Amino acid sequence: MMMNEDYNEDRYSEENLLESNFPNLNKNSSQFQEKLEDVHEIENALKTLMTLCGQDEKNPDLDKTPFRVVKAFLEYTTGYREDPASHLEKTFDITQNDPIIVKDIEFYSMCEHHFAPFFGVAHVAYIPNKKVTGLSKIARVVEGYARRFQVQERLTNQIADAIESVLEPRGVMVAIEAKHLCVSSRGAKKEEAKTFTLVSRGVYRDNPALRSEFMMAIK
Image 1: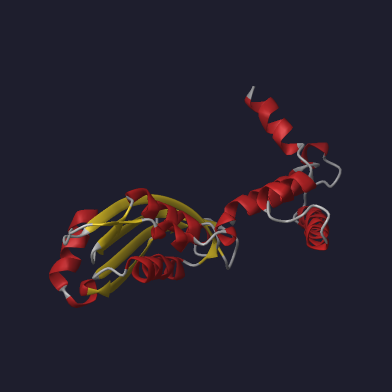
Image 2 (image 1 turned 45 degrees about the vertical axis):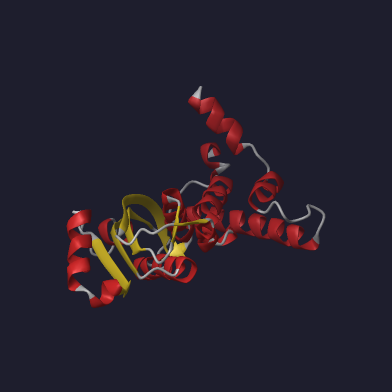
């Protein structure tokens, strides 16, 4: 059953793929047609790449691979087609003065240098200043910025920037721990290496006790 579902999914046309990813574009518009031409050009380039790497270009099992790759990359990069910070605009007035910490938010992203995946968890804390947002909204912000071509340092800062800009809290702290396949599967080939990035804003930057509390909480 699973194989049949995958097969049917791969038979979707390039037009349907663009319609699902760019719903605001009119199918008859010149912009839509330009994107369609781009898809065909990328598919042809992927066929050339596969041949360059040694793949038999006549292998019928790979006829739809270029289309599947385009489809996958559009899924990897859905964050470009939204404003992740907008998820924070729904707020609640509250007198909460203590830190709110959402930890172990799983994410998957794509290294912009090698187009290799990196993935891990994000930990986010903020100290409210009269308003808070839903806990799931923090996870959606992480997801929105992760689903782009990224570097981990920028991703960490973008999450903190969004929370600081929209919620205007007294302080924000974001930590990300991730494994990069561009490090573990190529180049240095250090399979167990992980990268940890940390950003602190407001009272978190100035108060060592608050930073220590955050680090203890995410252990």
